[in-house]
Length: 609
Image (cartoon, rainbow, N blue to C red; front, side):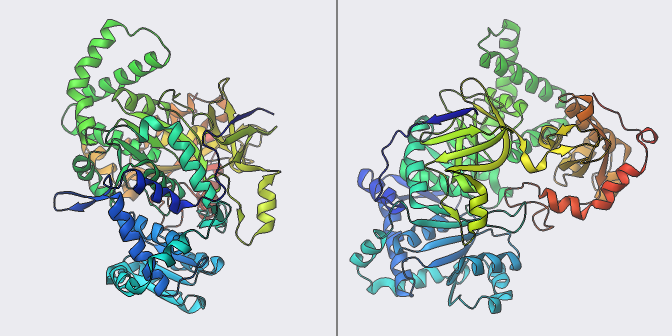
């Protein structure tokens, strides 16, 4: 059994809780801008001391409204400053937040609130409030609701003016390291969501140790980040707490349609994103260049960037010709992309799914080091991450300080350490099944290099075994296909079938530009595009490219383009845009059967490599 374990850098503090991170930050740098909020065309800074003052005032409001230490409070909202304000105010009041994705259906809201035993819920928008009201009759424990859109935070602050500072200080000191800090429900990609009990120690010890491991990122002069991933997800939630601990200025942009203008005005030094965001940035730039008649120049620039990065990573000398091309493209192409991201981005932390090495090398040559990491809700987000001082594209890095990683005999990744959750809420059977001693069984398959850098190869439950007995990891094929600009999502199928196939959806955002660039009507419907020969040929090229990386027995022989989208709303994607494979296999069973009803020879699809 292969195992790598990194000792903690910072000694554990059994009495600490999340509120201590803010108290320590205010003591060190009270006037440091800890947040910035949109104001006019710019941003208004909020100091650490001012943030703490607002947190205490709101915590008093919760106390006055009857929230007691240990009470569970649901929160449905987008990624805004108010999200973190409410988060810390609940910590100070001694309460436990149950975050709910702002895209959740009424039924999902009902499950999270009822299963957790929440006694109150906060919503942001009228739509969130309406969804809550749909199931309010099925939530007898909910006795209080507040809405941001109705100005209820200000009303709570007013209500709490009579609460003494000493009472909030008493409440914030009740929890210790082993106590529950939050109850985060899994995305439900493999069944009904389970509540993960994350402790104060998970956040405190992981923040303190991660800050040391990533000090070049979080302690660089003027360190700042713009959050646009949902803070209901553990990935952004952890980063927002780490930023408070480290003194990183944080801005928020809940609407990704406004992301580029926000990046341009906020000018962050590091970003937090999922691979789909990097794919979108690259594909948008490529299609924009194509529209302006500079597609060939962009592709040449991209190839040069990737070649340049690979040579540097391998420690090889960069030939003079490549150096000159790189210098030219840096002025013509790369500098413009850097400017589009705000001009100051040095690092980007990527998680939730594997990032293709091509994109990693491309952004590296732009001067953006993508620190790909790996983790789950059960590991308080990161278990491994590439380091600023040493990163390997194509891996998710080594274990963080205080974390151990090992591979079981079948290659399953197991984790133990300061970041591993306490238990599944009210579900001892699931908890017992998830652990081997103190090692959490992730369900992911991976491998190590000789320096302990982890590579993710797939999900244990998603491994396809063909009728011929060949084991196929879908992610190895899906990730390169998904990188194509017109591909929205892809699911590889073929369990107990004679060969491997794929279901593909088109990207409705990128498709019109691609159609126009290829002399086709840009308003073509998804139904017509799915049948179009040029579109099918483009998807075939993406599949042929993916097939190069696998054996012939693992290659995709047939595919179907579906005239629909897979979204959160349709129930086929999780909030972090991961596919719900079991739901897709069930909902599109007839489309899968159709792929195997007609012999391969009757189609015009290449057999691949």
